[in-house]
Length: 129
Image (cartoon, rainbow, N blue to C red; front, side, top):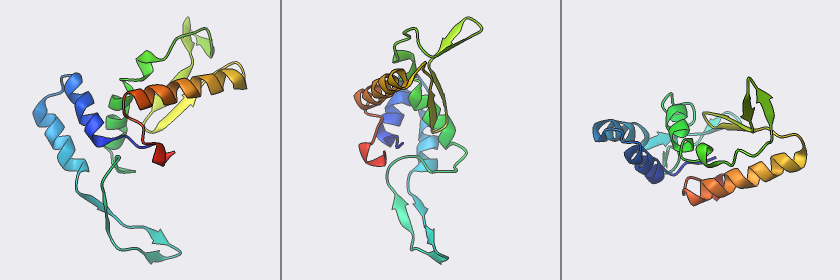
C-alpha cells in the first residue's frame, strides 16, 4: 500500500505535530534514491517520488500516523472477535493490516470499508495495490 506524502504532511498538521518535526520527516523521505537488483545485476538509481521507503525505520511510524485518520472511522459493528471485553475487527502496524471477521463475507465487507475510507482520506494510491 502506498501512502501519499502530501496527505501524510496534512495528517501531521491536523494532529498538531510541530512544523519543525514535520520538516525533519520530509527531509528524511524526500529526494531518496533506490536501485534494484535483478538476477545479480543492479539497476541504475531512480528517485522515489511517492510513498514511504521500505525498510526505513521512520516509515512504520509515519504509516501508523496516517492510519490514525482511518481506523477510528471504521464502524465498530459486532464482528471480529472479543478479547477482554474489546471487540476487535482490525489490527494494524507498519504497512500490515489484518481484518478479523467471523466469516469470509464479513472480512470482505470490512476490506471494502477500509479501502473506501483510505480513498476518502486520499491516503490510498490504487496503483500500489
